[in-house]
Length: 158
Image 1 (cartoon, rainbow, N blue to C red):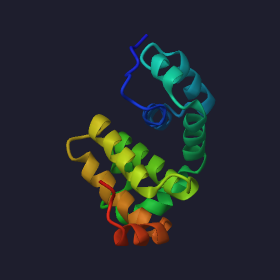
Image 2 (cartoon, rainbow, N blue to C red):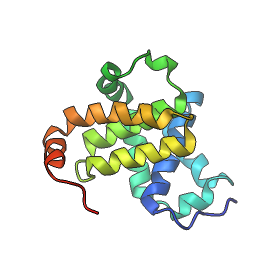
Image 3 (cartoon, one colour):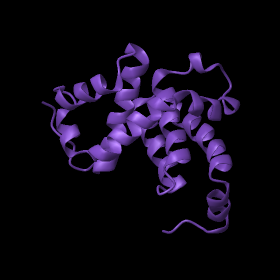
């Protein structure tokens, strides 16, 4: 069993596991319940599963998979290549980010973008975080227009 990373919050661990689950879903076509079970019992992920916010994990994984086509329609106008040419990691991160922007209004959009960028830095290609940031920033401007506009007028807290 892997050693859980103590400095990661349960919500961060949940998002990492969702990313792994979406990656698996995309590549294998396995059902979400099968993927959840694998994440729970796999030596590589079981420790993180135990420390994660499992309610958030399940909601994000199941919701993102269920709404994948609708979520892709949201971000396709903001990418420079066909969806099929995206790396599976970047695609999963953008799907997750758009799902949160659209379906989780209780999570500030800046948190969603920051979490997505961190996922891309940790799991994606060298410049993947720039791509993820650009796409999600454009999606946020449309999906969270009032919040984004307000954030532009309010400087971030130090």
